[in-house]
Length: 241
Image 1 (cartoon, one colour):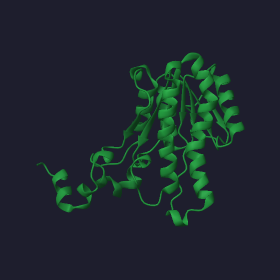
Image 2 (image 1 turned 45 degrees about the vertical axis):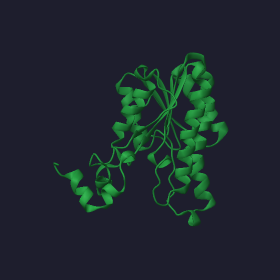
Image 3 (image 1 turned 180 degrees about the horizontal axis):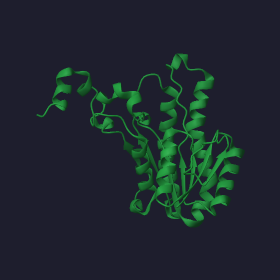
Image 4 (image 1 turned 120 degrees about the vertical axis):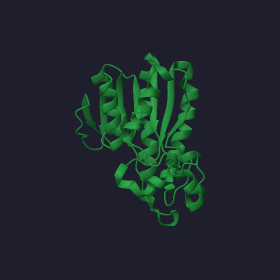
């Protein structure tokens, strides 16, 4: 597969690059700064919140790869503040970093994908449909990503282009060990697990799947918060029944 990966320098992007490369794919990364990942065929720098830079980066990646089979918009910005303290700059950074980047790179890549068929797999978040404290910009942006996935999936299905997203839970391992109790599987999510879901949705095994936002969240989105807030219910989950 010939993959354009936007946001290659973040941990999820790095894992996605390594997953596709291990399967024989060629991956061009695009980030604000060099990703420095040996799994990348080429490591481009661009600000894909800017329409001209997004177009130029996708065009250069397509030239280097000889075409595009898969676009993975994996960039994201997560300002943390309650709404009344969220600055204009924080709000627009979240919307631009998550949603504009997705739209602008997809717009640039779609003519090439339509020519040969292909897939877009965006990185969304459980915060697109589950509320967490102090993330108004990020939640709005990821909710927008989910809506755009469905719209593009509908509009380009007859052209042979599938559009899906992966919605990870918290990725960070030991760094967020205190959050593990809130996940039914008893831990947070690994970046390689997100990458595996991206590879699946991009590949032929998912040929009939489009317009889907796939949670990779260890069951977080199916669990009532009460199950973890109340010690007696938590004990039932942690016990042997």
